[in-house]
Amino acid sequence: AQRVTQPEKLLSVFKGAPVELKCNYSYSGSPELFWYVQYSRQRLQLLLRHISRESIKGFTADLNKGETSFHLKKPFAQEEDSAMYYCALSGPTSGTYKYIFGTGTRLKVLA
Amino acid sequence: NAGVTQTPKFRILKIGQSMTLQCTQDMNHNYMYWYRQDPGMGLKLIYYSVGAGITDKGEVPNGYNVSRSTTEDFPLRLELAAPSQTSVYFCASNNLAGGSNEQFFGPGTRLTVL
Image (cartoon, rainbow over all chains, first blue to last red; front, side):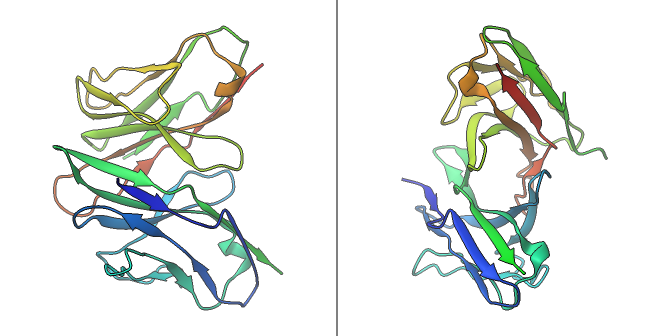
C-alpha cells in the first residue's frame, strides 16, 4: 500500500540545535517526494522537493531509496522554523496520479 | 495569477444546515483536491478531481459532495452539517504537464458547526 509515515507528531528542539524530521514512505515505483510547511494560520506551501536537490531556508532532504526515507534536516534551528511540516509523495497509481501526505510533524523551536 | 482562492474565510453553521465552500484556481491545473485539517492534526483528503467532469472520493468523503463542471472551480458541498465537520478546509490544485508536481493550496476556510 502507498503510504507516507511521519512518526513524530511533535518535535521540540532548542534554538541552534540540529533538527531532523523523519519521513518514510511505501510506494511501488519511483515517486516524487516533497516537504511542505505550514506556518501558524497560513496556507501550506512547498518547502522543497527531492528532484531539485536544493537547500531552502537552511533545510535539506536526501532521498534514500534503499531505506525509503526522505528526512528533513537543518543544522541549526531558528525560532522562525516553528511550524507544521508535511512530507508528501506523488506518483502514478492505477491509471491516475496519487498525491499522499503524511500526518505532519509540528516543530517547536524553543528560545 | 491569484493562484487558489477560497470563500468564505470563516463560517459558523448550525447543526443540520448546509453550505457550499467555493474554490477557484486560475493556473489551468487539471487536478484539484479538498482536504480537512482538524485542530492539531494533519491533512485528510475528502475528494479530488483529475479534470472537469471527473471526481473521486478520498479517505473521509462522508457528509460531503463535490462537482467539477469547469477546470477552474471545485466547490465542496456540506449537507446536514454536524459538529464533527468543524475543521479548516483547504483546497489545492496541481498539474502534471511536465516539471515538478507541486500542489498549490488556498488560504483555507475555517468552519464551525454548533
